[in-house]
Amino acid sequence: MIQIAPSILSADFSKISDAVKIAEESGADLIHVDVMDGHFVPNLTFGPQLVASLRKKTSLPLDVHLMVDNPRSFIPLFAKAGADWISIHVEASVHLHKDITLIKEYDKKAGLALNPATPLPLMNEILEELDFVLLMTVNPGWGGQEFIQSCHSKISQLRSWIREQKLEIPIQIDGGVSLSNMEELIKDGADILVVGSAVFGEKNPREAITKMKKLAEKTGQP
Ligand code: DX5
Ligand code: ZN
Image (cartoon, rainbow, N blue to C red; front, top):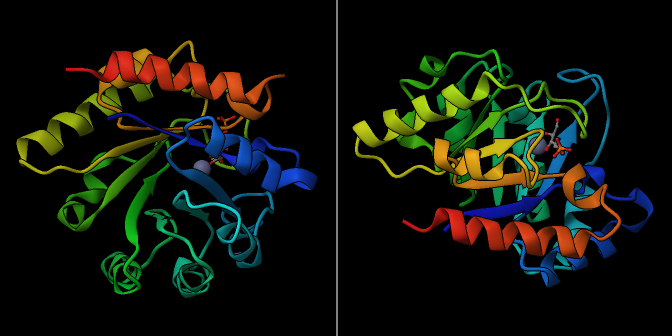
């Protein structure tokens, strides 16, 4: 089943819990929470307190995407705040195996994120340990950017690689996803689609999520 993960980065920050409610009522599968530290990416967003508050507002899994330097120091804070899925960037982690293991010690789903220009083989030695892979399809930092077209072949390569190794690791796609490219992404091998501006930038976010869920169900059927 293809999952839709609305990103609250594109929501009105003064009404985040309303955005989460809309997502949940419209059939979203996860809530994607973009954490930015002003170092790894030149923007600042949410801290663990927000995750703790949202934890009380929704039963959907909270998918925390850490776009931060030194992710190791943040993993315990977000895990204790109620994150369910935590992804860290390969470009930001010095001791990757140790950091992925730490996420799992908190009994959370551990994901590894790669920027668009980061080669897939950097995951070679850690792939088996991962609960999911997050492929960035824009340069991280902001919502509303255009999908980088060269990422299509990267998604298919990763899908074949996972299949060849007889692993079952979902691929999450983050950046520039919309109704117009999601069918192609699913055909490339995507399992989880993060969607920010194509949901919360629309006049009717409920309708946007409902349409995406329907299209995902249709396209994702074997
Ligand atoms: C970008 C973030 C994304 C962002 C995607 O750095 O990681 O999760 O919310 O937004 P859209 O869907 O607008 O590209
Ligand atoms: Zn993200």
